[in-house]
Amino acid sequence: MRLDRVWLIVRAGSQAAARQARRCVEDLQAQGVAVVTATSGLASNPFPGLLATEPALPDVALVLGGDGTVLGAARHLAPLDVPILSFNVGGHLGFLTHERSQLRLEDPEGGLWQRLRDDHFALERRMMLEARIERGSSRTAPAAAARATERATETCEDRDGDGPHLALNDLYFRPCLDEVSPTCLLELEIDGEVVDQYRGDGLIMATPTGSTGYAMAAGGPILHPGIEAIVVNPICPMSLSSRAVVVPPRSQLCVWPLGELSRKVKLWKDGAYATVLEPGDRCLVQRSPHPALLVVLDQSPSYYRALTRKLHWAGSLGAAEHSHN
Image 1 (cartoon, one colour):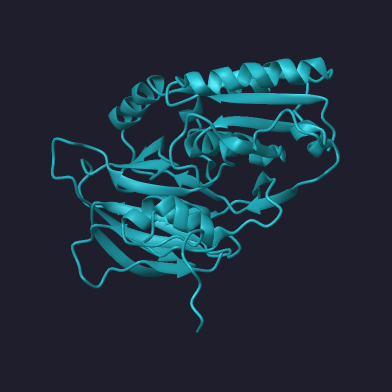
Image 2 (cartoon, rainbow, N blue to C red):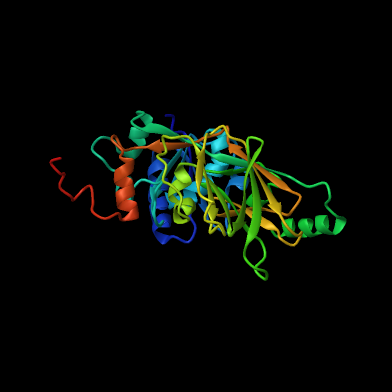
């Protein structure tokens, strides 16, 4: 890998990430690498500014934070084929990140930067989803004006209009208004065939990467990231027959909000606001042609060991003795 230009993305509000970022900047600049530092968080999205002002794309994006910081970077950098190297500094669960202990700048073998230059890493391609909105033809002028007012209050990442909205973890639909019963009615169509109508708290569409996130919390299955598929998982459905399903990656999914016009639904991407849909609109979801490129430093990574450690499953593969069966 060439290492001439690096974007250093730091989790906003984390002193630990900021301290580590300063060390990385000093080390990289001492080696003649051009470094641009930016903070990323719920209220700060650096990527539109970086893409508009920087003269060239980076050779790698170094992310210091948790999974949320990585997800934000992936949504913007995956379409540009920029690899992401991430470390859990100041973050929480860290499914997508390396442990902080692996951020070794001083090492007898040349350290992290020399390892990248020598191509001593793997590049993992993680499937992403994209959503596009088709608005209903019966929109009234007041409804259009209300949407224009709503867009004026959105952040720069949210102004994608009708898409495409990208997600590395998941796309999900939740009721929009709190002053009415927090349920919605969503019709799901897969490859042109109506499959079900879900009445409940919403609907999740997750990648294998996102199967250990919101979809898992809602009772969905865990998919190995080596499997390309889409998890469709209802959130607290009001029917015992509504269950999570796993569909092929080439499936074309369509979600229609049903009911009264007041029953608007919000679309979220990786936990970030995307847009609002109302009855008459529809959302088309499919696999994105742009996978996220994640740099993997581990020579023998174990997904199952990571699950055991991150999810605190009973027992530990590291401490338990193997049976003789």
